[in-house]
Length: 97
Image 1 (tube, rainbow, N blue to C red):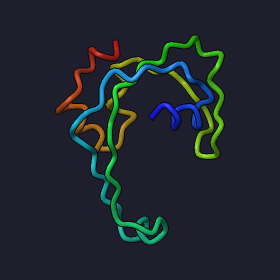
Image 2 (cartoon, helix red, strand yellow):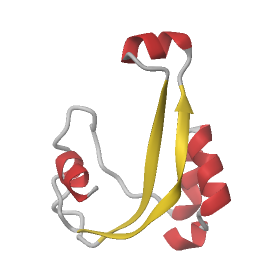
Image 3 (cartoon, rainbow, N blue to C red):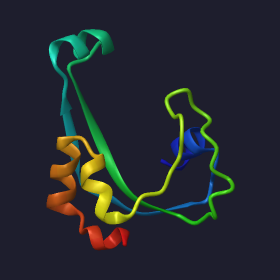
């Protein structure tokens, strides 16, 4: 997880607080599945705290255009439906306040 964060954001200022046992399952429609070469994706979720001041965050991956911070109460509107279900079930948004 820390290696992935470094690759995506350029920073090593993260602390893994916990790994969730539950996973998120994304089921892709036919067109997306054909494009990606698989029909679903299972994602392991972690609670990670960023300990930096923002100056070390630089997108280092062609999948990422920008890195921004959002208030915890905005999280649900930014997520895919499968992720919203995970957060509603397992994560208290007060953890992000």
